[in-house]
Length: 486
Ligand code: GLN
Image 1 (cartoon, rainbow, N blue to C red):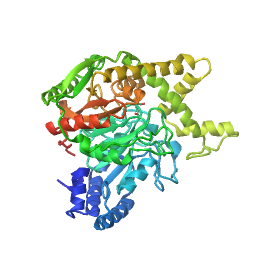
Image 2 (spheres, rainbow, N blue to C red):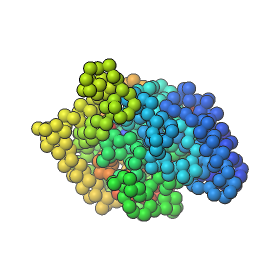
Image 3 (cartoon, rainbow, N blue to C red):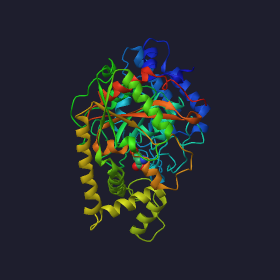
Image 4 (cartoon, protein in one colour):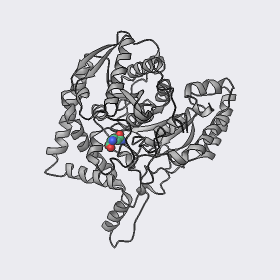
């Protein structure tokens, strides 16, 4: 097993004790990228020179005894975070040539903590999608089966972690984009509570739903990475000014007496693959055998969640994406004869079909005469869903459910059918609408060895609880230890 297979926790120990250097570790990761990236295609931009420079710096820091929690650890970041001096594309043609003059808050945080950045990962354009097939460049392949999707939109980040092309990665989750690819690639993915992590410098998709979070090989690593990125930042007015708990400390202890709510609507969803249902049932049984209690809870408004999300997210996106006009950023098509033509031509050439579809849906839902019927109604549904979750959490500590209805499907299988694709988000989007936190942890493998994830959701700022349950589960099973054979 090469150094590229290490977890953050283990690598940090080995770095601090002088068993390895960051340059050795980073070289091992770069060699791994060299060996498998041609097949997986997880990255939009690689920065080996920068990585080695950062690794050298990290080694100096370690030698001086100044190591932070991520010092010398190779990390990949979704190409939606602004990175100073490194292209940031959001996998869109419209951001062609855009090199941000500043770092996103989470990038500042990981750099401050000593991380080595290896590259920017592929995604669905502007994070709209569940497969990376909406990337303007190329789809990423699932390291467990190269003919299948890795999930999305943070599919590049999940695949890079699963294929050991980094020790951990950052992604974003607007409706499941961290948890669902984590589930499909058998890694851990955590979506923090809305407001826990600053969105400053994160290219906006749907501002009231977007959150950045970690994709890692273990739950322990998710706790370490979340610790670094969480916390107040005055540049994001929705980022809460509350102390950040010690997430690693929350992992300790057992889960005896803890109550896990099983939302009955989640277990009655149509079209769930029997293998997924079985793996999740077995996982719940495992949690019971470890001393957790389970109780059935109700989320009666869950049935409206997809409809509400696919109004709210496109509405916010249509507004956020208005800034790409061919003047201020990236691509500019200047062959028209008027300013309006330049806007139209730049946006038509720069945005892919899924992004255009969402701009149309969003603009329609926000237009005079339809606003009350669509956007207003969706907002009301959202409030009711928040109340449903509050009621459920009055009866339990965390909720459990599947992450995705099926294991990873084949590339091209659903790309031409947006509605089927949207319906597959049923297990993840409710957490974004309600602003609560959720984690995906590997819980099984189906036919052909395709990974299956278990979702644990927590109430607002319930990260310590979901980390604790996921960690206990991970230690009692060996799913997370399995690696794809690439
Ligand atoms: N699949 C969902 C969508 O297409 C979620 C995407 C996300 O979380 N960024 O909107």
